[in-house]
Image (cartoon, rainbow over all chains, first blue to last red; front, side, top):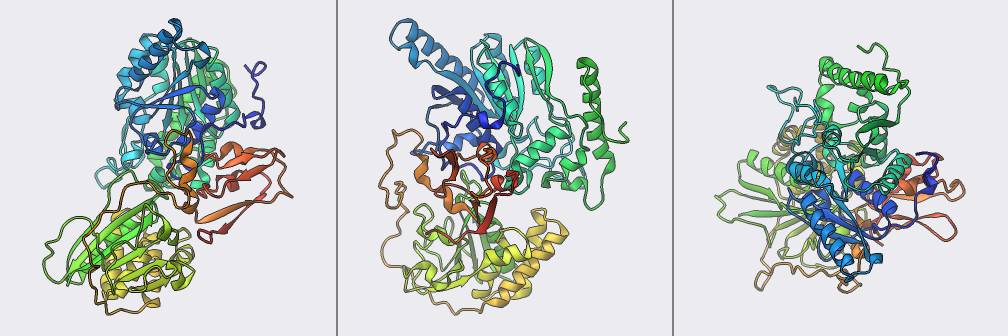
Amino acid sequence: MATTSRFKTLKDMPVEDYLTPGNTMCAGCGGILAVRIFHKVLGPNVAWINAAGCMTITMSYPLSPIKSNWLYTAFASAPAGAQGVRDALDFLIAKGRLPASEDMKVVVVTGDGAAYDIGFQATAGAIDRNLDFYYLCYDNEAYGNTGFQMSTSTPFGASTKTTPATEAFPLGNTGRKKDLFEVWRIQKAPYVATLSNSHGVDFLRKVEKGGTIKGPKLYIDFAACPTGWGFDPKDSVEVEKLVVQTGIWPLKESVNGVVRHTFVPRSLVPVKEYLKTQERFRHLFEPAEKSEAVSIIQSQVNEYWRKAAAAEDLDVRLPEGAR
Amino acid sequence: MIVRVRFHGRGGQGAKTASRILGTAAFNAGHFIQDFPVYGAERRGAPVASFTRFSDEEITERGFIFSPDVVAVMDDSLIVDPLANPLAGLRKGGCAVINTTKGADAVGGARKDVVVVPVALTEQALKFLGKPVLSAGIAAAVARVSGIKEESLLAGVDEELREVGLSEDMVKRNLEFAKSIYGELAPLKLKTEELPGKEELVPLALVVSGEGTEDVTRTGNSTVRHTGNWRTFRPAIDYEKCTDCMICYAYCPESAMSVGSDGRVKIDYDNCKGCMICLTECPLRAISQTREGGLQ
């Protein structure tokens, strides 16, 4: 991929912006940054299909920060909306009622609430019908728009509005983050990839690569959320960097079911370094460190990379003293 | 007598928590109370409002406060924001507590029939807490001018901030912050009178001052929203040090940075929200921050 991509360094990021300033997302929002970069690669002719979430608020009448098109759907049905738009474009172009030059790329954009939970089956349907569309999930690991309630994307040990750290549940969320990448992959989606805004070139290349593939192209972007996670907005990209360096969020892609890691951290930073950056994990360290919980998180990461290293012959050094 | 307080802040400054602290403080002082925020699509930085009523008799009023006795404005840029309109309906003889470094001039003579109490809260919050969260400070200011005892206030700060889950250290620092603001001000004897005329709801029409009504058919018309007044700090590029590596440009979530025809990165101060990702990410430290001086 590296030899054919037009993206070598961040300097190759297209300078055309299709997201205009003055949107209503929180300062330092990782989700809107993902939309901005994604749009740059796709170019101007895009129809965004959105399900309820933070991004919905960017389109507050009468002001819009997107220079292309935007369609709302109900929470569960963004991929169904995408099917409608795709079919309409195809029919109109086939009948000569719309010039082919006005064709659009159809992109579903939702948060993790719609992708992991509420729109789960609509996505499965779209994959099954081999709908030619992109899916961009900006994953901030909870229902951020409504006040940060737990979703099935919420990681183990995170405190949310509905899984606060209490005496009865001192760890906060005791569930484990759903592996949506795998769920989408085993449904035989031709292209599935994970993204992190902090690894911009990897991000640009994956979106570019999606353009060469017909059918569902599904992306999960790790979108740092200063408001929900509790950190200073200025550290947004730093948090995204750390989640990759700790190995918690692996950057990978699957082409026709074959997985390849696109960025391999040579030596994993201990997960503690990442957890400590955010309020939602503060109860793991205060008043005293809950080292058992932290080591559970670390061993999940270690287990993941041991398997990945064996499968792809990767050279990954686990943190010192790793079990 | 009922004291009606309306808080205007920006999402993240702590307007909702301030209304709760004041409510609990007044409750501790033996009053009947109500406190509640406006629920809606609030965002960090966007104008938000919350309310507190307290009285020594049972309160039978309900709903939003359209004619407050006291307004607490947590950011002076809100005064000219048509969506916030914080001085609307403030009773004659009422009080406007304003977080500003400009003194009483902050309201620009808009209301001569009210008492203006300027207080530099952001500076104090940065000193005590290291971040511009103002809930304890603004609640302390309103408690002081409306005659609530210091111990009632501090108990309110303690209880409410613990409830939102602040650490022991942060609660302590907020108590110091509240004490400092409380000590800086003096109680007022307020005699308020409702403004003549029927209560009017703030019209929903979007008027962006000086720009007329925006064309809804123009794509990307959000540039007129001017989210630049969300900033607490203002980034500036030192072009001597900058090597045009474009990292800041790549990571600006707002598209508030653009590349000029000379290949240099420029900041759109009308809409930059001051998240300061650019400052963190600049490998050459060519970006600096200064405290925002308010809208020009």
